[in-house]
Length: 135
Figure 1: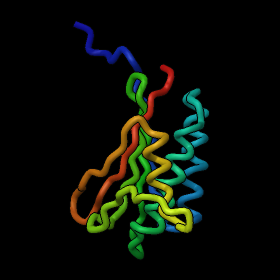
Figure 2: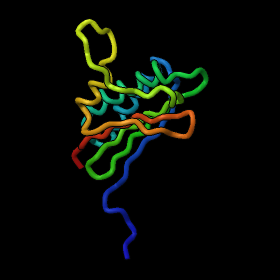
Figure 3: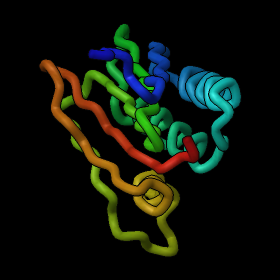
């Protein structure tokens, strides 16, 4: 019996400060990892940028980082961003022309094959998105 996995499982997990700089670094390092795996940068890079920016803006708790996890199984890339504001669940809001914010999750919804929110160990939550990638 062969116990080896026929397709490689690729993953990256990092923690960042919940600041605009941390969100930008998450996007840049995710892009570098996608390049190393030979995967297309977009739309994954855009999804990471939106989820990390949301974690820094809305999931921020002083002294607590947010986490980014990327992993590929078969032809699916899963992006997870975990923050420590489980009491603040995100949701896509209807857009109005005069709104200056609130477009991030609408963009994630448009770019991802699926996305959602999962509660974590208190006080955490994870916002995730999945996209198909070429194996």
